[in-house]
Length: 496
Picture 1 (cartoon, rainbow, N blue to C red):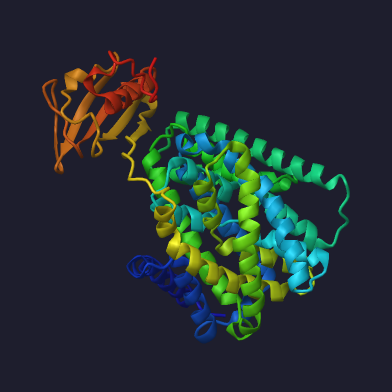
Picture 2: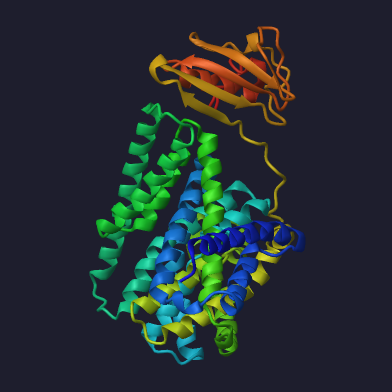
């Protein structure tokens, strides 16, 4: 076994290569996950012993990485963005999954002469869109909030029912009329567990005066991971519990929220890099040639039959225009999740499971090259691309412990209507005052005649009781300017 310094050095080198790969992928216009997979394949061929990454070990690490990716996705997903598309997102996560499994399973039974159970297992493995791919690629595609929100919800939620379907089909256990009821119970229970831990974690973090800022991100991530463990222990969906807990925490008024989100984003990147590199280490390039033809057939079935049919079934009841449905069909990005699901099938004892892993690996590479590189072009072609929306005002809060007060840090974004407002015009509630302004990296004590500029940062000290009203007033002025109160702005984006 390699010594500790060699092992740590190898891990550090892989992470640095992954970070550089992000820059290279942007320059070349390729999704970075392909470069991560390539790094893993090269390491397995020339540096590391591929034998140490057996199916069970790789599956466990893959699920752990998927949990962290869902944590990052949930924490950084804004409820305001996904709320208009809640119904479509849930339908894509449930109805769409069922239709996709049925279509892929039926066609692959005919085209590849698979038995029915194996064919539907392949359909289940291929039905899940990838959270890492969607969260990293979609947010740069410039589409409407409704479309982006639907796809983010789908990728964050659909892993849960798909994992249950894969385990059920791969284990060889009987499928009875009670099976759908059990699956539904596990999903509902997972959602309830995630909601409870998310609300409880947000309540505790708002009232805890931890001795170090860096403890807040650790605590937030730990709550989400605890949701996964609790869900699995309760025989519910741990993945759904994770995403729901992260979504609740990410939209709560957490102390040091900006630090929490930044830490989660870095952790998500680390999980993505590690996951894709590890999956590249697992596969053997010598076996991939035989998987090319089945991968092409399965990819064609998925891309041109199953995905469009599943989107139509899920989105039509919500009267979604056909252009948006076509974009949703093309945006079903696959990444590491189908490969991890194929490994789940192997560990559950599915016949010919290793062949499925090879086919899914090749298919993911092909679909990522095709879909990931053309997604912005397709958005423009279908005329669903949108200009960049204004940046939301970020208010970072830190409790001051025994003082019974809070410290709010506000950054004036570009385009904010806070620009040009005098501090006296903020009309903050009693118990709140602006104590410091930082402009061009120079800090000074302001007065009522200090006029805010774009990119200014200012600190507001407020009593705990006035904290919510203070933040609401600042957000109101950000949206409606100094006359926000006259215009009926209440700080939530709605008028009275």
